[in-house]
Structure formats: C-alpha cells, structure tokens
Image (cartoon, rainbow, N blue to C red; front, side):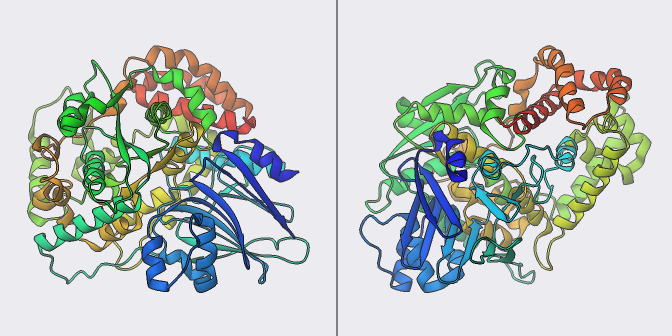
Length: 589
C-alpha cells in the first residue's frame, strides 16, 4: 500500500496510525505528543506540531474538549464552529490536513512562518502530502529527479526560490495559506484552490511611538510567545552567549515559577568550541549562574566534513554551511530525558531592526564611506575594487562580497545554467515585492523563511533524533509585532535589537544584553580546505552525471574555480553539501 510505503520511510518519527476512507488514506507518526490523528463527527484530522492558545480559544468560543483530547480532536471541534476560519486563530507551530467528509474536500495548511514542513506532489490523479519529500516520493512512486532551477538558485546563494524543492515536481505547501482539494467519487480533482488565511499587516506610518509603551508591548509579546510553547514535564533550551536564546531561557524560567505556566524542568544545552574564537562558554556561564551545574555542554568542534553525510541523509532540503551544528544540538538533547528543544531562532529576523533607518545614522554611514575612499589601503583587494567602481557601484559590490556569489561556479553551468539563473532572479523580484504599506525588508525576510529551507531543516534534524524543536520567537505574535513596529524603534539608540535589550536587561547580566558583536560560527570551517579540495572532483562528477554540469566546461574552468575555493573555505563547504544533498535525494536515500 502507498501509505505503508510512506510511513516506512521515516520510522524515527514514532508510532504510526492510519485511517482510510473513500479516496483518502491518511497516517501520522507520533512520539506521543507531537502528532495526532482523529475522526470526530464530520472531520478526519491529521495534525503535527503544537497549539499554544487552546484554552483562550475554548473560553472565547465556548468550546468543550474531552479530558486528554489531542490536538487533532481539538481541531475537529474548532472546524465544526469556524470551518477554515480556524487557521487564522491558531498560535503555535503546526501543519495540518483535514478531510471534510460531507463536503468531500481536503484542507491543508501550515503556520505563518512555516516551522513545520508539508510537501505536495501531484502524480496522475493523486495528490500526495507529507512532512518529508522522501515520504511523498515513496507514495507516488515518481522518479527521484533533481530540480535544475532549484540547484542553480542555491549555488547563487539565493534562498528565495519560489515553492520549488530540490526534487522535481515536489512543491512546498506555502505557509499562511489554505490549500483546498476537491474530490469526485473516486479521486481528487487535479490542482487545488489556494487562499490566504494571514497576510503581514501594514504599518501606520503616521503613528508616533513611545519607547516605554513599545517596550511593554514587546515584553508582553515575548511572555505570551514563550508561554504558548510550554512543555511538560521537561524541555531542553539552547543557551548560547547570544541575546535570543538567553531571552527564551530567562523567560521560560520566569514562567516556570508560576503554577499555571505549564513548564516542567528546564535543561540548558549548549555547543562549546574550545580553542575557537566562537566559543561562548564564559557568556553561557554568566547567563546560567547557579543553574550552571545542570548545563550540558556539547563539543561543537567536530570536523564538519565528517558530519556532511549524516546531515544530508537526514534532510530533504539543501543544508547551509553551519547546519551541522543543529545536528549536534539534536543529538545532545536525545541523550537527555527531554524530548522537546526550545531555541532562540527568530530574534535575528524579527527583533533586530535597521540601525541605518534614522537620518543621523545614514549621514554617519555616508561619512564613513567618504573616509573609506580617502584612506590609503592599497593592499586591500576589496578597497581597491571599491575605488575602481566608485560610490554608486559600492553597494552592489558589498552585497556580492557578503553573499559570496562565486561567478566561476555559475560559469560551469554553461549557457543553460546562466539562463536559469536569470529566471531565478526574475522570480526573486516577483516573490519579494512587498504589498503596499508593508515593511519591504521584513517582507523579504518572511519570504526567505516561508519559501526557504532553514525551518524544515531544523524540524527534520530534530525528528531524526526523536526530538521536537520549537521556536518561540517565530510565533505569529512576534512576527506581527515586528511588522507593526517601526524598524528604528526596534533598533533603539542605533543599536541592533536595542528594544529587546531594554526589555531583557532586568533578567540577564549586562555581559549578555550589552553585547554588540556577532559570533561567527562559520569560522569552524577554516582549516578544512585540504579535505574539501580532495572531495571536490568526486562531487563535480555527481553533477556531471546528473546533467547539471558540462564536463568540458568543468575541465576548462577547474583551475580558476579551485583557486577561488582555496581562498574561501566556507564557500567550498557550502557547495559540497549542496551537491551531496542533491545526490542523496536523487538516489532515493
């Protein structure tokens, strides 16, 4: 049976449950709390994730849940009252599929940020939906064909690649939208109707903001977001020296002291890097204080190349250059009694602000550029290039330098690859055009999350180790706060996360909230150039065999390309895992 083949692809996700009715065959796998399946009245519901505001909704709508009701059962009760209007009211991280037995329609939706993956493939007259691409392909029996456009986009360093995935004809169910599949007596109709249940709110630009009121709003938002992620009896929390993870740790401890918080024991888990500049052990100890005796430090200095293979086998998407650190965290949690991990992922997206929004700061930046052009730094290649392009070309040059787009890599793709690259750039402009009144910078970040790869990667790596990963700072309330708050307010006094710093300063040591530097974890890749270069010809051959690269073009460009890669170990590693990921998906691993 197709459903059995799909479930067999992911035994690590837990005990399977199945239900078959008419044209529908649905199954879930659960570790006991993270997923559920229910048939209640008119509704069959398959649910994955968590909802943090059931009590509030039940009181508001006068719903009555049976004792011990699962999330799937609660969704069925809510559907009886609200229909597809339910989705706009949910707070949490979730992916859900709902079969309307009377209306003979299948609904599918995900949370606003896309924390829980859901993939879709049409094959013949059948639609296949699942949490992993390998499950979808096991059900459809379709070929494991690689997607050229997606690979080109990834090699360009572009995360906005529409709804495509690394596997041809497999798409992502877009977050914040409802997919409706209608059924005849024997099968589903080809295609689906799609509508928004949420859109980023526009900001009223004429509104004046009071710093104290903004801080109180953010404080309430953070408390609600972490409270809604509450887990019992225990949870692990990532604690680094950064502001975001320590904020979640501090708030979770504050809420735990409340009888009604829902939090059990909290286990701090961190990656440490002895001997590396990115080691944050001193900051972590300062944050934990008396809780430091319960701290579980996991050594993160393992050679990244040794983790490439297990990393790519665990996920369906293209990992990024520091994704192996997520694998190490999930593995560390799996060795404890905790089965849920809370992270600080999201603060860099929603709470950073733009330090150059103010006129004064823009003028200071302009003066800094003037000083750059007057300085005598003839030995610096970037400065020499900047001198040659002038001020007007400097922004493009800097963007290219920071993105590390390697033009020699694209040249190996030949004429067809360059054509695909131009089409990808056109899609970028289309997908990231912000609606009227919506902050364009935040809208681009939202698209990057919704249509990108990082959140499903977190989820799949956690599942591979039997760990559910939750991101309180990706909650809808935090996202909406960011869209409604002027960027300059978030970056108070011209400091990134200035508003967040003012909120958490009573809860954290100044050593933490006073930090303005950014830890560069990709520094771990330095020193592995030789090993990467030894692997490179083998991975080139995988792309040649897949039809992505022309062998004669590769041979001509190899010398130049190797020179570039020797100068940039992180870029070489990134391209290496892209190709390994393609190989694993294409071979059906």
